[in-house]
Image 1 (spheres, helix red, strand yellow):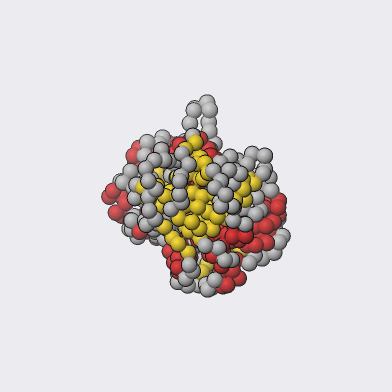
Image 2 (tube, helix red, strand yellow; image 1 turned 90 degrees about the horizontal axis):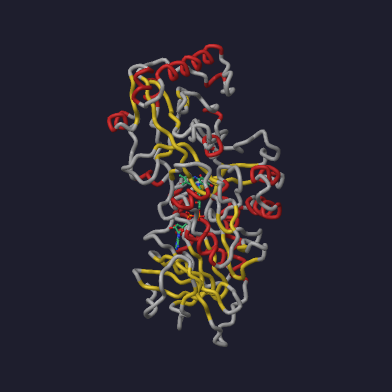
Length: 512
Ligand SMILES: Cc1cc2nc3c(=O)[nH]c(=O)nc-3n(C[C@H](O)[C@H](O)[C@H](O)COP(=O)(O)OP(=O)(O)OC[C@H]3O[C@@H](n4cnc5c(N)ncnc54)[C@H](O)[C@@H]3O)c2cc1C
C-alpha cells in the first residue's frame, strides 16, 4: 500500500543501518571510517541481537581453496562470485579486527562436546577445500558472544555514529527515481522520517521468531528457537516491499534443543559424555550421535513419513544413564537467549524434579513415562549394548571409542526438537552486498548483510554467520558510504512504500 508523502525529514544522515548486531555494527563502523554520517536504528532497548548470545567465534579461511568447500556446502544456491568474495575477505577478518582496535586468536576448545562435530576445524572434513579453515575468537574482553558484542559496541562508541535504540524501522522510502532514500521508523509510538542521502543497509537478522515465516519456509515443524526474540524477519518484509527477490529461505543453522512453556526460547542441549544415544518415536536410533554436526540437524530430523503423516524423528529423545547424568549439565548456559535466564543444575537433578528430564528405574518404566513402546525401547538399547560389546555400530558407524553402554540405572530421557540458532534466508544480494530484484538488478541504494539473507544457502559451516556479518557488513558499509548523495534539492516527490507499519498520519515525531 502506498502512503502519504512526508513533508519533512526528522533526521538526515548519509547512511542508515537498520539493526544493531554484528553485521550492522560492522557496516556502521566501516561507513563511518570512510567519511559517512551514520545512523543505526535498533528496535530493542539494547543492540546485540543474536550476536550477543552467540558462541562468539567465526571461521577464517587460510587459503582461497576454501571456496571449493563453501561452494559445496551452498549446494549451487550461491553465486561463485559471492562465495569467492566471502572467502577472500574472510581471510582478513583478524586483520580487520586489529585495524579497529581488537585482537583475535585461533580458537581450540578445552573440552569435547557431543554433539558438535570436529570442532574447531571444518565440520565436514571429507569435503575438498575443508582443510583451509580455522576458527577464531576474540582475545579480549571475552571470547563469547558477550565479549564479541562489547568489542563491537566499544568500537561503534568511539566513532561519531548515532545509535537510536527502541526505534523500529517500519517502511523504506523511495524517491522519484525509485531509489531507496530513507526509512520511516517508529519510536515511542511516534513516526520518524529519516533521510539516507547515500544508502540504507538492512541488517535486521533472521526470522527465528516469526512463526508464519517458519511455517512457510522451514522443512519441518515445530521448529523452536534458541535466539533473539526480536529476530522476526522485519528486514525480509522491508526488502520485499521494494521489490527484492528472496534466497536461501529454507536454510538454517539448527541443533536439537529442549523446549518448555516457561521459557520462550529453547535450551540447546549438549552431551559432554559418550553415555547417551538418540532415539526417535519408533525407539530407533537414527544417526551417529557423536559424529553429528549439530548445525545440520534440520536435514536429519525433517524426514516426513507420509503414510503415517508424521515426522518420526520429531520429537527425538536423548537417552542416558545415571553415570552420564552425573558427569555434566545438559545445558551449558554460554550461548542462546536463555543463557542468563536459567542455570541448569550440574547433574540435572533440579530438571528431573521439574519434569524436564524424565527418570525411569528401568528402561521399560522410562519408556512408559515418555509414551514410547516398552519392548521397542528395551530392544533398541539392547541392540546398542551389543554394538558396544563388539565395538562396531552396525547401523550408523559411531566411532568405537564412543560406544559405551548405558548400563547404570536409573535411566533418563529428555525430549528434543529441532531448534534454530538462526535462519539464513532473506533478500538476495550480490558480492557487493547490493539487494537484488527478481531480475538480478540491484535495488538502488539498498544493501543488506548478515543473517538477513546470508550466503549459507544449504548446509551451514559453524562460525560462518559471524564471519559473513563481518565480511558483508564491511562491503555494505563501504559501498553505501561511496554512493553519491541523491539530489533532494529540486523538491523531488517522495513516495512511501508500506512494509509493516500502519497509516502515516500526524506530525512527524521528533528524534529521541
Ligand atoms: C545460540 C547461538 C549461537 C551462535 N553461535 C555462533 C558462533 O559461534 N559463530 C557464528 O558465526 N555464528 C553463531 N551464531 C549465529 C550468529 O550469531 C548470527 O547469525 C549473527 O550474530 C547475526 O548477526 P546479525 O548482525 O546479522 O543479526 P543480529 O545480531 O541478530 O542483529 C539483528 C538486530 O536487528 C534488530 N532488528 C530487527 N528488526 C528490526 C527493525 N525493524 N528495526 C530496527 N532493528 C531491528 C534486532 O533487534 C537485532 O538487534 C549463533 C547464534 C545463536 C542463536
